[in-house]
Image (cartoon, rainbow, N blue to C red; front, side, top):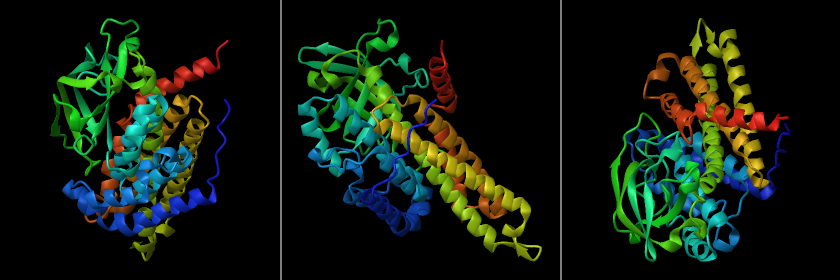
Length: 390
């Protein structure tokens, strides 16, 4: 099983990541906990992300973007999530849809949409999950029916990140409810909220963690969209389009997990060197040292795996297995490390006075976001069985 070569960032790319790190330490860390506890959308931080060009990070330069490789994007998401994981989520579906439009959209669609997406003026959301279709994505019931020069969309979507603030939505539908296999009847539409009637943003869903980002329900009732909004111009291509795009989402979630785990570790080791018991810092106790060693080792392994998955995507190769491995390992590492960090902090770790409780509440999202870890194991196993077939 060949391991993707890890791409060393260029000096320019390293400078971009360093600038993001400075932004995180100066602007994000001082306000993240307050915003998170208030579950407040970080308007000022989003404006600064726009100024840094982050919404155009992977968009080609000809459309106003930075045209960065996904290995650099992974490093950026990690740094942002080290400050506040929700910022990585605000970028996630936007980056996924920009790649989807760049890869499958018509030249008219790319020229019209990508420039304003690159500036962050028009941000994006992805509509896949439904009340009765999560892991079994082929069971969606949102349908699109041709009506002259338009399509009429009807159905309901759940867990739409950026649902309030987004202006462009990629909506997975069924254009053929009778198709077998089911995925052959699936299509994606690029829906613009400002010009679409019959599209309603529902309630904002309250969550244990992953706060500050609007996660909503979305309803389509005879929502009329132009036929030109059918991604790729041909029905039945939606499954391929979504599956190739979700690899990027899993790289994002893996990188977010590394960022959260890194933040938890950094807070834990700092606290361990300051907190004294039995006349000495707890960092001098072997039990704490063993915990710190395991945490740091797993974080570094997770980081390398996330970058390997990003490198696979950069190479233009199928990356579902690598993205699944990265998402699985990184998210499980984040869950473990944040709990260990809380244990090192003792009672203070359970208090809202310190950041570690936020990391602990954010970590479970990565276990289920962009496909549960149980689904990742199936994806990995199926790929391995093919790879080691007769």
